[in-house]
Amino acid sequence: MGVIVVVVVVVALGAYFAVTYHPSKKVVSPPPTVTKPTVTVVSNQTITLAPPNPNELVDISWTASPDCLDPATGFYVQDEEIFNVVYQELVTWNPSNIFQVEPMLATNWTISSNYENYTFTLRQGVYFTDGEAFNATVVWFSFYRTILMGQGPGISNYARILFSYTKYFETGYAIPWGACHALAYATGNNATSATPHYAPTP
Image 1 (cartoon, rainbow, N blue to C red):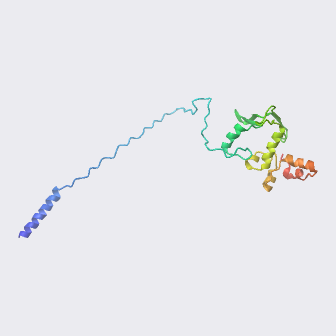
Image 2: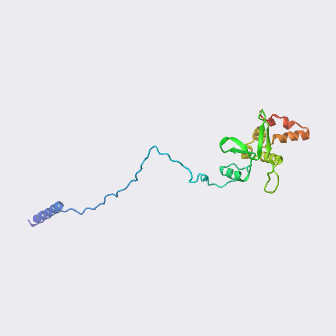
Image 3: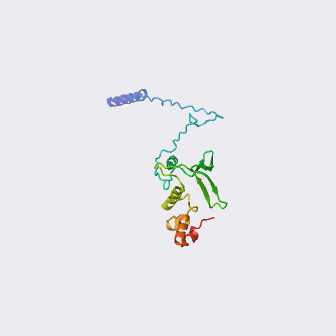
């Protein structure tokens, strides 16, 4: 009888604690409030991108260093900036119209009706830093040097104009038509000047 009383008391105590006992709950803080930025859209607003000083041009679009200082071999965008301040050309781009050129080292020029002959009148009184005068021989040397070097960037401007691109593509050698005709004149052998590969394309 005593055992039954003990069991009843234990069961009663268990039921009592099950009903009345509540373990402490962990208090969870609410998530922090995130303030989102407010974006205001204004319609019909004109935004002008311009330097503070209209007489000053700041170009930060290219930060790479030049790869070459020789116009016959250099062709990257960053090379052009160096070429433009170190070298001068016969003509240069018209800043008001990129489809036109204007005189630089050439004061003027004429073009034949068949577009095969260009005659440039050169500026007088122009000298290199070592005192050598600028003249037609210098221009001739500059053109021929670039062609004979056979570098793609340099000769790409003269392909089919001052030398045979077909012959260059076949052999890897670029020979100016003037040199071909000079050899033919000096040797009496017209093989190079008469061959279709070296004949100027109309």
